[in-house]
Length: 280
Image 1 (tube, rainbow, N blue to C red):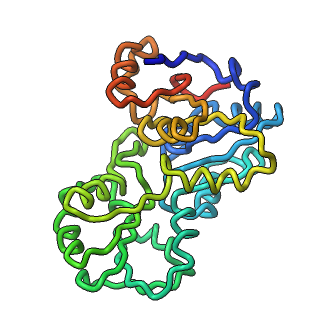
Image 2 (image 1 turned 30 degrees about the horizontal axis):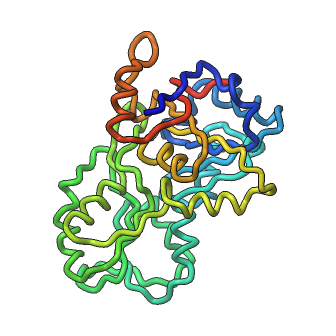
Image 3 (image 1 turned 120 degrees about the horizontal axis):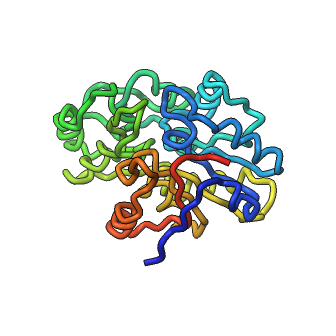
């Protein structure tokens, strides 16, 4: 197994790349506020004429996420665009007509069906498609959704999972995501179509936004299963940020290399580099 190289600062290797595909949750912010040093890092990349795209598995359209970043204090001139799994979901659903759709998710995500020609239904026996944006609240459990999923599967609707993440950290607290519900739906025999990392559509959509064919791209994320696996599948270099969902590999002195290598070996997903936090 190839072992990733440890970085202390992004400045050690940034000059090898033109484009940076950077995750949001766990790298840029924790769902509540930006991490220390992020704005400075993005400012350095802009100064060096690098291009930053934020790729996120958030089940919301890109314009909603851009507004959130602005509220966090991150100016839009520090990045090229935001590409979200929610945006990919909306783009893929926009040509569908007159499907009966059942929504799983909190009301804040329901903008995801605005402008679509689908019928929102509550009757679980008359469903063509499920749009799954994730649980309602931070303390929600998979068990709360099992009865609903067992009812829905009787009419054999396909599930559209607009966030492949199974878990995310909000503040300092882990919470479940849409990917965990989708995984269970598959276990009971349901069919799921995923949009977001590590699946190819989100990368294809991002490539279409790039003004050059230069593929000197570096992927930065905190999830082996989504960010780094996606980079592996696209044959792109990557950095694993270890302070996110894999924070158990850290210790008081930095990163426990044995723990990290064990995790990488178990998942067979290999980043090119790793560092604790995104710093220039």
